[in-house]
Image 1 (cartoon, chains in turn purple, green):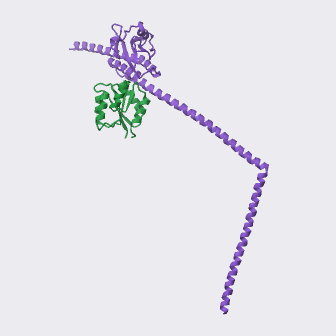
Image 2 (spheres, helix red, strand yellow):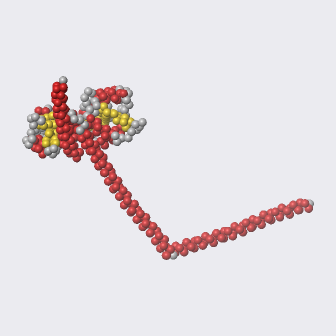
Image 3 (cartoon, one colour):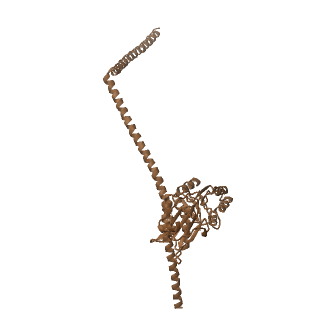
Length: 272
Length: 124
């Protein structure tokens, strides 16, 4: 009987301890809750005070305005720089196209002069002149006149687009061709005019040391060619100078070859 | 491995000009043929990624060469660019109907030739 009582007391004591610990924990929670309430109230007071203060408000507004101005200035700088970069880009693109065109022109001029001086055979030189006039200039009807060393007259040495007898004769100072020859400079007329073998559209005198040795006369262009470009005018100048010297050199070479053969013939006769 | 282009053109001036233009392409080997027959020999004996062909040539003209290339199952897939003085619409149509992929007229613009060639050649 006494054992049962002791056990009941002991269990009652245990429950009492648990309740005490629960009461302590609840007190701690209430204290913490009070502390947090106080802290929150203090923060709210501070915020309300700042919002009510005109100086604080002004300070915030000033800071925001200054930031806005700074951002606007930065935006303007970026906008101006972007515009500059776009302009530079445009200039680079235009310059690139110009250089490409210049490159193309130089390649044409290089090839023309290279080919003209690639041989000392007179027929080959004439053939190359014809190739340049067709492929690089884009001429369809033209004639290459060369001065005959014996008669002193200009005759058609090569032609395209018409029979040789259809081309007008050329004598220095006479007619359109003769006057163009005398001028010693390439002369151009309206390239869109109707094809007429009495009216050339380009005359390129072939001149060596102020002595005319021939003339290239163009009467019609290929149908896809509607005018002359800057490159064409450069080609006319190259043809006027380099074709003339190439022809002159080829003639001298063939004359010297003939003389050499004659001399060699004499030597062979004398030594046999 | 680089790509190979065949230029079939009887004019040395044009060949040199085309070589000049095509040299700007990287890793491209350029082979020249001086007439249609020479072109046929070269295109049949080696691999080419593209052919530039003139129309008016001695021995065998460009149109004949194009039809022979297109008629050969081993060569028929080669892209062909015609470069010619013939600017008439019927000439263009004839070359294209025979199997040319592009038709350019002389005098040539190097930029145009380059862009056409780049557009037709498969990446290496």
